[in-house]
Length: 410
Image (cartoon, rainbow, N blue to C red; front, side, top):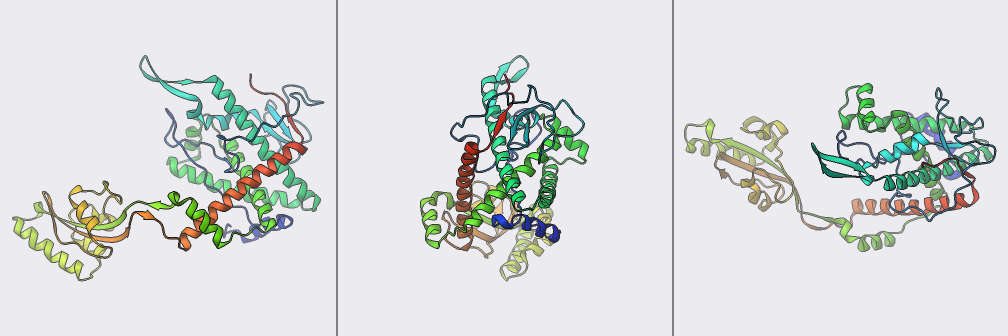
């Protein structure tokens, strides 16, 4: 929940009372790089864990290509209930109408497709270097997948709206939208940080290079969050509990997922030969510091005061935490041989002396079945339960709901 808006949160909770609900919660969407685009392009923003693109639901028949009373292409319908078309563009193309008026636009589907560029492009050698070639067949298939996924999201939202209406809680719709909008704004601010864009205009340019727009991205995030929260509320309504035995069984069945490599968090003080007239002077100086450290003095403070490298500037922490990644390589054997909380003897290298302290140490193997791991196991089981509930609900709504697909790309 957003601690800064307790009243708004309570209003949202009230809206989900009939669903056994709680507050909406943001999900961190995955990011994946793609060729010849700005670093870390946005990909699959609203991907629900319950409706993966790689494993679409069994084919369900779509409604007739041209719904009764509508022409192709469709322009602004007048009976949109909860998803009005963006204002100012009468040429917005509707490709599907879900339920009593939730719409899916061609623009939104294509932006979802563009977030999957690596799935339908490849590099080939050409004049002037590597070139990107699109596979039109794959691209068309991905469009169909994204259209279906977006329709499924709108089916769930249509049912949510119908239940709130039946419970005479229509006023809560706007509260839910506002809550999801604020969460989406937070997510977009996080994207801006990752892109290191200094202004809204810079961020828009980064998206434009990928064929994306802020309004569509915000809509995807907001509406997927609302759909996912609705499914979670249904699970809470069923009051399903997970026993300790089920946690243990999942942990043992998926033991490989809970393996950990050798990992270390270490600190260092470097004394450079260049700072002294003789190596003996450097040795005596380094030995005095090592003795203070071994006696229990604050290692970080010693590093900040006496280190001749970069460790002092970074609070004394060394570079690298896994085998083969410790820098400099001369100190790695000592780092792994030193117990947590202990200070090493002087380590002589061609450039000077290093003093190492191991702050934390994790040994390779399966993590212990402690409270932290049990929390992670519970979260995974809940995600799987949510995925199953999402699929169950979508299949039910496909059978009972009304979906009108207006026009598919040629």
